[in-house]
Every structure is written in C-alpha cells, then in structure tokens.
Image (cartoon, rainbow, N blue to C red; front, side, top):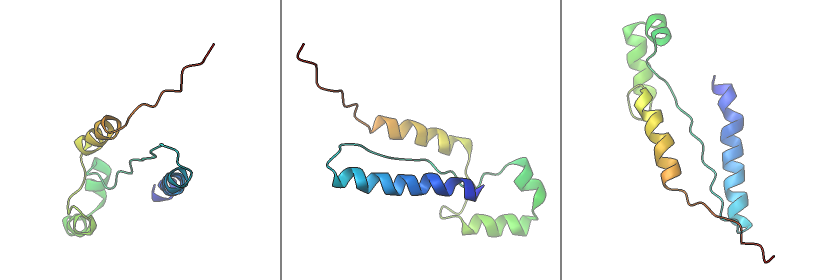
Length: 89
C-alpha cells in the first residue's frame, strides 16, 4: 500500500513548488492516510505489535474514518475558486 502512495506524494511535492515559482495561484494538496485499526490489522498482530505500531505513528494512535473525513472538508474550505476572466465578445 505504501508503494501506491509514493507517486501521488511525489506529484504533490513537485507540482506545488513548480506552480509557486511560475506565479500560478494553484494549490496542490493530497491526503495520505496512514494506519487504521481495521479487522485485518487487529487480527494479524499481537497486542504488543499493535502497541509498537501505534508508537511509531506521529500521533501515537491509529487513524479513524473521521480523520480522513475531516481532511476532505478542511482542504476544500481553505481553497479559493479562481474563475477565468470574462470574454470581451
């Protein structure tokens, strides 16, 4: 799964400074959720392994669906819609 996110992370990190250098007023954001406590994760690890994994996460906890939902609403709320200039016809 981590391998699948790398191209998107790289694209975001490449597009963002490129747009800024060219003076484009474009934001490029992406959401990359980490570990979630799913049945698969819970059933495939011992409690000690789960604790060690949680400790390796910066927030020291597994994510939940609300974390992703909040990010999906916060990013668009901070964006401005830039309309093209009206045509002179």
